Length: 104
Image 1 (cartoon, one colour):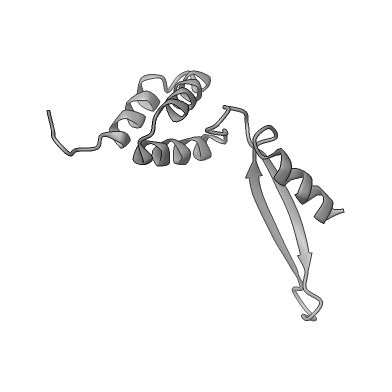
Image 2 (cartoon, one colour):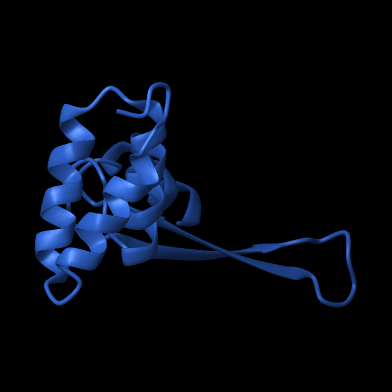
């Protein structure tokens, strides 16, 4: 046994490699692991992989992309700045409602 060694990256890589042909199975396994572990390093690895796949690590739902434009009245030219972020329609519901109020 390797004492003190953290294999979080290797564990997540094994899940992704073993089931690479079944994206939903990869996400289901990662979401299960995310919700049952207390290891901060494996949680961080799972969050990165889920973001890359476009899924929420908490519930496994597909993330939605929200885009908006801010106009900078202090500038004459190129006064629009575009933003986007990915949020979960289930877990980020409160943030999405706030976002929708700001955009309107």
